[in-house]
Amino acid sequence: MESLFEKQKIKVFAENHSSVHGGDINSAYKLSTNHGEFFVKENDGTRFPKMFMKESNGLKTLTQSPFKVPQVILEKENFLVLEWLEKEREEPIEYWRKRGTSLAELHQITNENFGFSEDNYIGSLPQINTRKENWSAFFIENRLEYQVKLGLDDGRISKDLVMKFEKLYYKFENLFPIEKPSLLHGDLWSGNVMNVIGNTPAIFDPAVYFGHREMDLAMTKLFGGFHRGMYEAYQVSNPLEVGFEERVGLCNLYPLMVHVNLFGGAYEVQVNQILNRLV
Image (cartoon, rainbow, N blue to C red; front, side, top):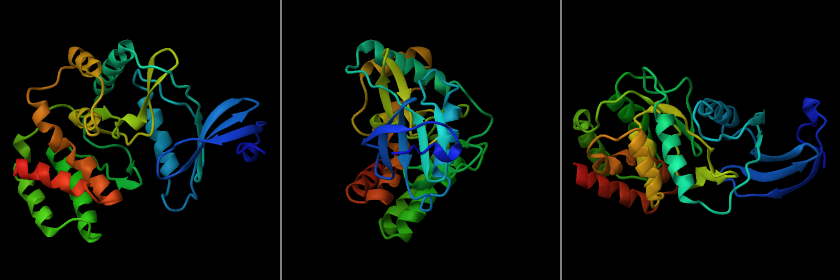
């Protein structure tokens, strides 16, 4: 099988390839070649315009952090070729502490405004990154309102739920501690992080923007949380403001609404439960 690289006039030829888990959006596989192994994602290039370009830009932005980030080898409209990362068999406490310290250092990369240089994707949904000086305005307008409108238009949420969101917006100014915009991975669940050779924390599949750092930390807790060693190391390097645990649900309204709009079902129940506590 000739390589995807042929049209780029690079003399790389595939020896074999095997399918790997790559999420629900793209086909993904491990490509073994005469120049080593690569991770390849493919889609038809039309349903999600510039998805791979935006992912590539996000990965390159994250290389400012101490995390291992897969190198972008080749990016086209319908496929993305990345460095292959080899997973370690175990996750010792040393790895979790490195992960916490690396995340703390990532969040110490700051910007004057919340947002990013371009809109991108979270999953297969557009993520709006119009820059704003105020976190509350950014979170309401670019995160929650967009997802709420999408859910209402598609019939996935009720008008009663929309009214609860609107009540919440009036309380926002006093809910989050004031902090500088931090560089975020943006989609930091367990499927997008990995321990690679040398007990090195790696991150991939980003939804990058500059936001409130509690968003990343809260999302790590959305599907069960990570090892306590990560959170302890983070606290030593970049302590969180008092009350973070009470704000976890608030932060996770955004990824939960993304899941409502992608999958529906029980995620709306979770959103409703959080809103009932907040309003």
